[in-house]
Amino acid sequence: MQSALGQTWAGFARGLPRKARVLDIASGDGCVMADLLRARSDLKPVGIDQAKALPPAPRGAKLRGGIEMDALPFPDASFAAVTSQFGLEYGEVDAAAREIARVLQPGGVVGLIVHREDSLIVAHNRARAEGIAWAIEQEALPAKALASLRLRLSGLTIIPPDVASGPERAARMFGPGSAAWEIAEATRRALAGGAHAHPAEVRATVEEIAVRGRHELTCIATLSAAAERSGTGERMVAHLVEAGLTAGECRDLRDDRAAKPFASFLTLRKPG
Image 1 (cartoon, rainbow, N blue to C red):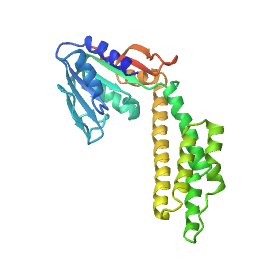
Image 2 (image 1 turned 30 degrees about the vertical axis):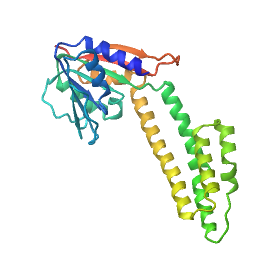
Image 3 (image 1 turned 60 degrees about the vertical axis):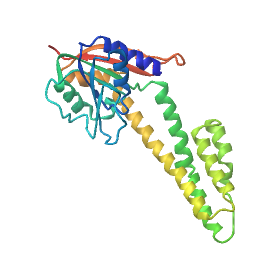
């Protein structure tokens, strides 16, 4: 997948004017800017991200944190190109599309790599979410484990039957090594391995299992919503066309291991 991403951005970079200023939206660690600069060291990329704490920018690039994509702090027609990789679909797309059109120079080009709602990445994460929800919400294994800790204060060390059988049931329903199995087994081990530990220590471990599971559920829900905003790319194109850009290429991105595309590459242009 990384190879396909890098090759896509190298091809995009080769079509840009000499010394073009490029705005990379939701830049994160600056990987898109690094790909662009590997192909064209003369480019002048600037990355923005809503996160305030960011790693150092790639050499030859600038990276600014604490900036929302729907309120870009740049004058009109500041950039010859705008890029984003798995970023635009996470924001307020209509407002961000208008901002992109505003800061893009006439004749300027947009390149986007976006999630697809039919990709294996999304399907895999939705399956993980189903297993996590089963373990934490439906079966409530961490909650049952925590409830059993109250008995340890009176000298009784037990593992509730649902917790003890949790890994086997999870493996049967979701598969060995699934997210459901991971949580069930981690919960069971926390009680079994902590038989001689202070209940507070075991409690902290079980609570951490639950917190991490709920955090992953939130992340997967965010990914799923972003993919739904994108569709197979056509929905993102529609937002940008509405903002005044002209649609160009829409290409499936694939890797060697999967038959289905994992993302879509979109290009649009601002009329000159």
